[in-house]
Length: 268
Image (cartoon, rainbow, N blue to C red):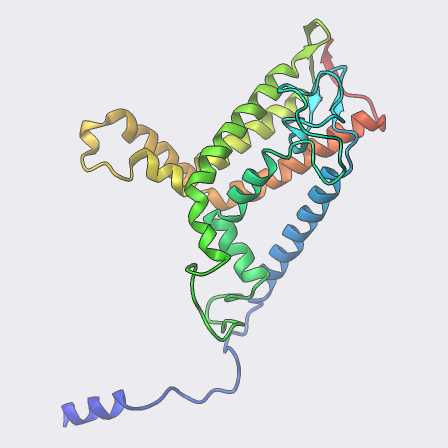
């Protein structure tokens, strides 16, 4: 009898439920907030990248990360660390050689995949909620097959973080003397957060200790792996924090360059 009942239950179809989901909570709120937040940031960043002005404060050497490194003929004297090899064409951003890699790094990030899959593609919008698409092919077809480039985009993001760090260091020069102001604080905080987000990347954690079979034989790499693992647990938080610090840094430098208010100086 037990065998018969089991076979009978196994042959039954799922319960016929007309509703898409039985969830009664506000499951739609997190993807909605994500959609609004990411959309607002993308719009702001796009507008700023193609404004081609108010990106550099020559007096304090403040350069916004959206324009670093500055490479076009529009670059103000002192802002082009690597020269100006790119022409003055409005469709070419000042940081045209680095922005694509930063975009690739963010878009292929494991957290951002979850964020925009749910918020923009509804695939799926939340747990226990049906996918908006009839078929699921994973990340094996165009364009999602490019998600596998994340590990390579990580290396480029590391190099760009070094450039941003140098920008923050150079900004302590006020003319020919040492200078320190609120802009320096904002630039340094932004760089620290960018490094924290970059190092918290899953690819970085794998590079640090993913292939090690005996941690005891590699104590330095093990300690670094432990450090990265702690950051990795906060990867989602750091992803959002860095969006905020990037926007704040850019807006503050834009305000100074436009003359909306002066920089709060502590030294020189």
